[in-house]
Length: 391
Image (cartoon, rainbow, N blue to C red; front, side, top):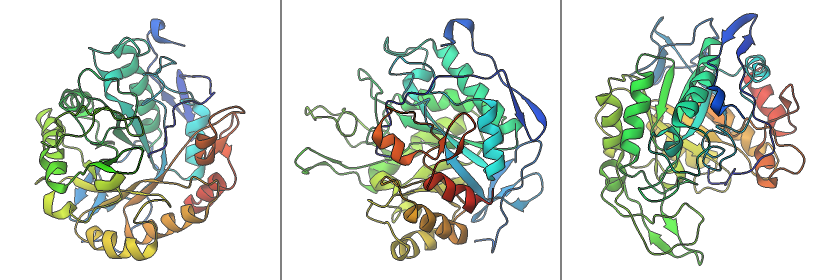
C-alpha cells in the first residue's frame, strides 16, 4: 500500500500465550531487553488445529496434506515494517490473544505480515528499536501464534533501503541488501510450510513532486534488476541519487538457496497493480503466486480491467489479491474487489487489521478494519469484511 502508515497510537502488547478455538497457542517471549488451470468453485480454507501446508498445483493453491484446494482470505497486519525503524517498538501493538480469537471468529484463514529488512538485520541502523534478536523473536512469536491457530502467514518485504539509507518507507525496487534479508528469513522458516513469502511489496515507477516521470520500471528490470531507481523512499523529495536494483529472480534465488520450498508471491508493476507482463518475465519456478493490489485510485480498479488483465493470468498461475482496501472510509470498492476475488482468485487480504485510537493518523484510520480491545469490526469497512468472510 502506498500510504505512509507511520504513526498510530496503539500500545505494544506481545502475548505469552494465545487462546484460539479453545486451544492454547504458545507464543515466543521477547528477550527482557526488548520488551516495551483453475479449480472451479474452490472452497474456503478450513481452519484446523495445525495450519495448512501451502503448495502450488497447476493454477491453484492446495493444502499439501490433503490435496484439497486452498483459498487464502484474510487481512494484512501492519506494524513490524515501521514501528521498529521509528524506534517505538518491534511492532505497533495488537499481537495478542484477542486478535487471534477475533480473526478466527471473522473467518480469516491467512494473515500477511509486512517486515522491515533493516530491523531484521544484525547490522542495523541506530534508529532501529532494540536488537535484531528481539525483532526476530517478536516476529516469530506472532507467526507462531497465528499458525498454531490454523492460519497461514505471509511474510512480506515491505520497507527496505539500499546501503547507506534508512529503511523508513517503500522503495521502488529491492536492492542488494534485500538478498541477505531473504536468505535469513527463508532459512528461519524453511521448514514451516504454513509460511509463504511475498518477495517485494510494491514495485513501482517514480514521479517527482511535479508529477514528472523520473524512473520508469519495466518488466526486464522487475525480473533481472539492473535499473537505477532513486534512493529516497516513495513520496520523499528526490535528490538525484540512485541505486542498482535487484530483480525478483535474484530474490527468489536467495529463498531457494536457503532451502525453502514454500510458494513465493511476486507482485507486479505499478504498486503490484499491473500484471500484464508477469507470465512472460517471472522466474522459472513451479511454486510462484502472482500478487495483485487492488485499490480504487489505481489504474486497474474495476471489474472490467480485472476481467481483462487478471482473470486470464489466474487461469495460468495462482493469483492472490495480497492487498485491497478503501481509503475514503467507505466499503463499496472493498465489496467489489472481494466479490471479484471470490470468483477469480485464490484469496484476498484486506488492508488493514489496525486499531487506530483517537488522535491517531487520519489516513491510517480510514483503512482501519477493527477497533477496541476486542478487535470489533469497524464500520463500514471492517463490518463489510467480516460479513463477506462469513464471520
